[in-house]
Amino acid sequence: MEQVQSAQAQLAHESVQLPHWQLAWLHVAQVQSAHRQFAQESAQLAQAHVEHSS
Image 1 (tube, rainbow, N blue to C red):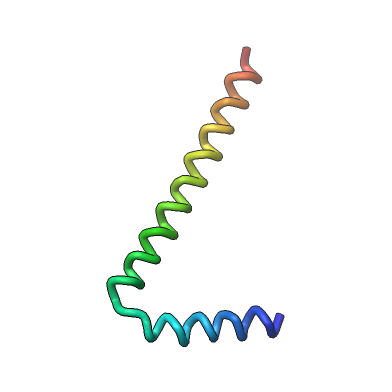
Image 2 (cartoon, one colour; image 1 turned 90 degrees about the vertical axis):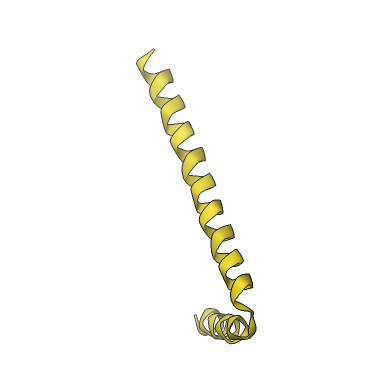
């Protein structure tokens, strides 16, 4: 647990040193990745629903 906290602290320390545009880019990448995951799960749910109802 302490390792995770120290890793987060390290990351926070490094992110302070990152230029603003790079932070923004990282945020965009995270959001896009979350959206992609959500889209995949939605597609799987739809597929399962179609198979179940047929």
